[in-house]
Image (cartoon, rainbow, N blue to C red):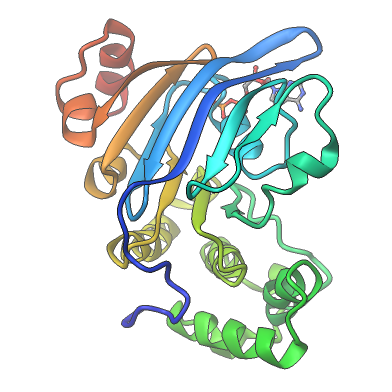
Length: 260
Ligand code: ADP
């Protein structure tokens, strides 16, 4: 990818996303205890931690896919969304278009072509015309080297190509925040590099991102801040070089030393 797309969020400073006191239980088991998070515009925050520590649930709450039990989420200094047991689904869904998620398992529609997968959200959720949605989709597909595969179905693509379509589908929603949920963990090792390269280029172009990853060396390379979670709480956070290079908490040390 060579140039910044027209819709890259304009560089500015300050918090794009602020989360406080986020709580979530499943069937009486609390999996997020009280999460606070701040993501500044144009920065990359990597969420790391053992399996089951609640990282995916945080992303799903941010994207309105999961209903938090409590907490406040606000985007871009806009109105805060406060959650409680009585919160309606509509309030949760108000978050949906602020961020776009790239899933571990790609989550493409199997019976739709690459182009249809990318234009579905812009047409149906954002009300774009088909022509406008296709024009943007083709521009974005071209940038990840997949314009020629516009009429292919997901099963005709490699995992790396499917994930690049997943990234393009997220970009086509023109979100202010990109959420990546272990975007390379389902890929064969030789396909990981292409996907990480695309993510790194987006970070360099100024996209704001929250990235859940087990690729700690990639996190060190691309993230401004690293947040280490364990057991539904944030154990440690700080600049990537500090949390990954000189972790202060014992639990972080054990985790980082095992993976780096
Ligand atoms: P991580 O992303 O760090 O691996 P998750 O957020 O996926 O962690 O999961 C945190 C905990 O919540 C795990 O114990 C998981 O089993 C549980 N969990 C996640 N989603 C659900 C669900 N829909 N129903 C029940 N339990 C869930």
